[in-house]
Length: 195
Image 1 (tube, rainbow, N blue to C red):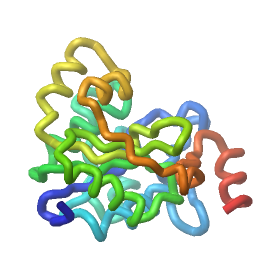
Image 2 (image 1 turned 30 degrees about the vertical axis):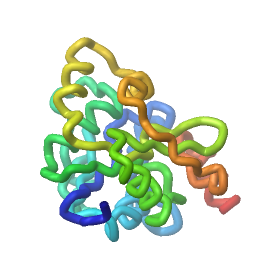
Image 3 (image 1 turned 60 degrees about the vertical axis):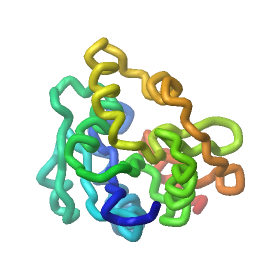
Image 4 (image 1 turned 180 degrees about the vertical axis):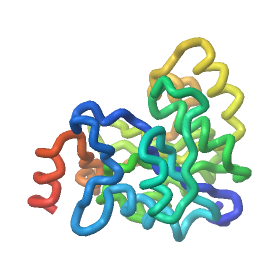
């Protein structure tokens, strides 16, 4: 299941960052590196190819050394549009995704998602013991046509689409702090102070 040619990686950085006053979260510095660089590094041992899903500042993201893909439209349709773009860009069986603003997620955490797919579910998503984190997941790319149909119906809710495919929820109750994400400048300062 870990064959790098069967797994591709995608860092989701396609949002508007409204709560960050328009500053692109994935490019914000955290301990000397852009936030997105942490997710990219966590993916590398597990994947054969990696993309960054970004709808703004694509040249700046390219400076991180990976190809950048944009949503098919420019309406900022949310993470599902980025996931669909990733599924279409890769020729792998599995797409491993994580958001650009979760720098505490490590390679071993992502490996747990891949291991959960060995029983053939279509989606494995992270769960911290209290709630699930659908943007930290492994998905089978054969779902691309179904995802396109879902978006074509005007649907945008990530958890509802995942639920249609009976995802396996991978227990991360032993590491709930890894899902700390950055939505505001205060979040970034707090994350730096407490980790």
